[in-house]
Image (tube, rainbow, N blue to C red; front, side, top):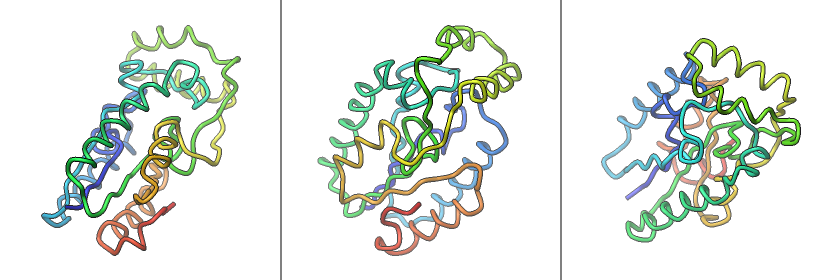
Length: 200
């Protein structure tokens, strides 16, 4: 067995914190098509979204530091425990993780950083009651005013996964560059494992 372990928002865009936009719909459609082209020896595990588990949906945008302060490490460890149990029981011959570029939890090589002391925490409650269009506008404002930055390094969940499963292969999907991300992902999954290992 080969096992693809993938961030759930890549397959079902409705997990995205603010609600899906065009790029999330397109990403999900193309990845589902690609998975359908894989051989019968592949299985797929879309793990529980740790951000949804912690804060529900919809969620205001937040950085890695904000999520860490809210207790994300505990949730990330619980998801990693679940994945570890599956790997122990199923013993796949190949394991490939796919995370999301810039995600505070599921970033592989890039995550989002900001100063947690300046984060407008009350907006998290307000955000829950906003309609989709208002959320899209407010999300952009929070990111811009909060000084969110894309930085090198993994999100909180993938930091733990890379520690626990160092022999697995890790890919990062950039929803702002879907074409290149799809090419890398297809080449990695359909090719040999040496091509896929730690593919940015």
